[in-house]
Length: 168
Image (cartoon, rainbow, N blue to C red; front, side):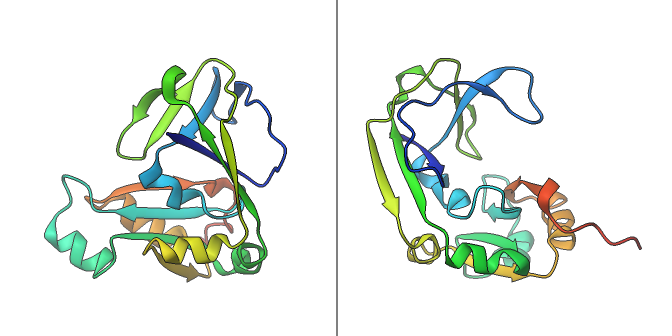
């Protein structure tokens, strides 16, 4: 099963649409392991990371410590996360193809009808219940840059909504 998380409660059919950075109209889905990266409000900028097949022991010790996965958000988004309600749409996998196994990204070029929807009343609790470490920072940019140059597996999502990068 694949999933689509949304703050919208009434999606009956997901239509392919062009993403901000894309050219092709697609329906996006996420696998079960990576749902954790989407347990925040849609537009919330976040840096997520976890051990991948090429992660060095030094990067594991530096970034993950005892955590299996980390999701970092900016402090200005914390209140919205506390009051957010999400809907987890279960999607049949037959029309999807995997485009990034490390991030759990799948796409479909066809409309997709969800087979079930779950209400997530407390995304923060769901996130913590999955054993994800939540880091709350004034700005994500320093972590973003450090993780991007590491050997970790990562996703940097909605960074266009992050606070402005401070000049050096």
